[in-house]
Length: 98
Image (cartoon, one colour):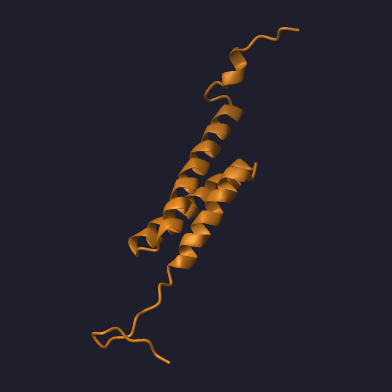
């Protein structure tokens, strides 16, 4: 059975919802997995997929994927820079009291 709009054309399915879900999963991976290189890659790919799915109005999953991908990418870059000593860690300024 073919569903049609009142104008007579068939309703195209929203194939971009899968991209929105993928961006959400990659954003979660970018936040949770403790491997900075993998986090940056997952975050950038998640940003790309979220951008495409938001362009095609895939809904709130795309927005959540975008936010989590941004946060995961920023956290991974910050961790990497602190690990290699490019920026100081906030824990370096504390003295040991015992």
